[in-house]
Image 1 (tube, helix red, strand yellow):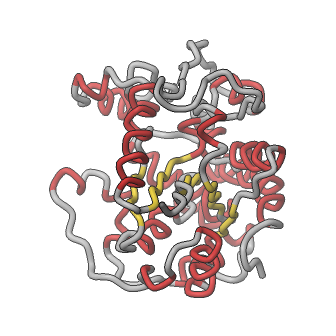
Image 2: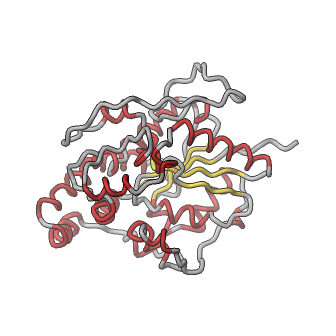
Image 3: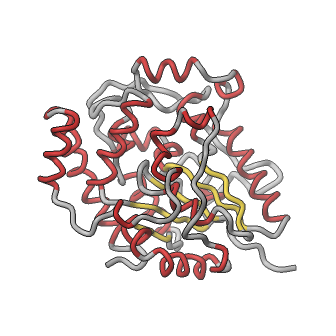
Length: 322
């Protein structure tokens, strides 16, 4: 019997072109892709870790079904492990994509981030391996994530990054509409940072595992070469990737999320112009100020500056970095 290939765990920050990355892999015959399994439990579930307090977000919570409102991290993790097992039985490679902050241990978040807004102390979700799988009693060091370390060492981690000058204003633009986000609210620091990704990267290296780091710049400017390198490292056929596609027509439910996905939905191929070669932060600051006012522009600028060190650290390890 052929040895099972490792599941791929894609960890990203919001607005780091992760949806484009998944689109490129979406029709690969050897892969089964499952994005954002922990999204609902993080935002709306019984063990909700998001603490944003705005009318827009409160309305989103109120609109959720009882099934979503009672989600726990353990329930979602069990679903993920079942998906992995079923996918591998078919001979395919499972791909799980998640925003790192949505599975970050909240104790790590409180220790590593400075939150200007007051946050509630909440119980830390407990997530264990299934009884019929590996033991929960492990000598592996605790990771910064909520998921069991015994699980995390069985996957191939892929960390997606992007220049904070692009990430932070893009996140503000869509999150202010969808969630009423502000540049100093209860969730902002952890959602516009690469610190979580850096902590995960360092933890993996300490376990003797090398995460694959992909920067959005190379993803859009060196797409073919980069994806070929990724496929080689993950032992999958390079012929399964796509670099062009038909324009997508979302249904009415998905249209409500259009601010997050509209660029990809309206596209038919990779557009390198979304990631220019040179970016001047002073010129960008003027745009932010014109769009949202000086106070917001200053908040975005602060967040960009804070994120740069972790981004630069991770970029040193990125595939095909320029």
